[in-house]
Length: 251
Image (cartoon, one colour):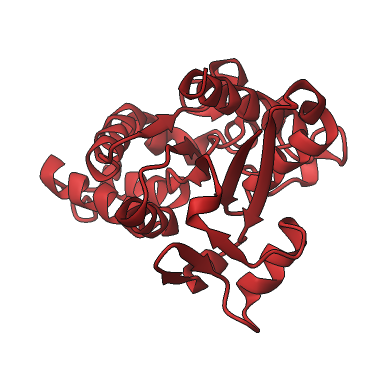
């Protein structure tokens, strides 16, 4: 049996839910453990040789206990694969930057060179806790690592606020290219694979289908303000893609 270590932010919730509710019987050869640290709690980890520990009394300790059946220590040599869910596009920050770039008033317009934008995207990715975890793991072991990209914003955001996203759509392709370029550069480690969002979950290249939004079929969509967190259906699609890749590593 292959032991899998999933580490992630609140986006890991949909994947863990999919495993427990839908996917587990299909993959008896895998035994996953889910270490979720919502918000900024993943930054609280202590990095020791061969271990990553949630400090006693920390917020991260409480989250790990809840998600990983009371476990608060990740033993690096105890797993056959490490999976991170997920690496953010930093959509909100990029969208705000696009607002500045798209201003038509010359007195307010701000010009950013492509080199400057590359540094911005690099910095956003480098600030992710995932980068620190990956660096630490790869310093001690050669176990395969998977980094799964955060699902894109729901199409509902575009449908409800079309004018707000006009600047973003103007530069979306540019930032998508910069993001992919930065990921390849900053996550250039042996036996590390970057897994993109499942194609079937995308409404457009930059937005996720409505049916994968967490509140879908649960509450009045007119009142929804969280366009980022996804449901178990999305978790199943992402998890299936991840597990398919893991099976290719361990035929």
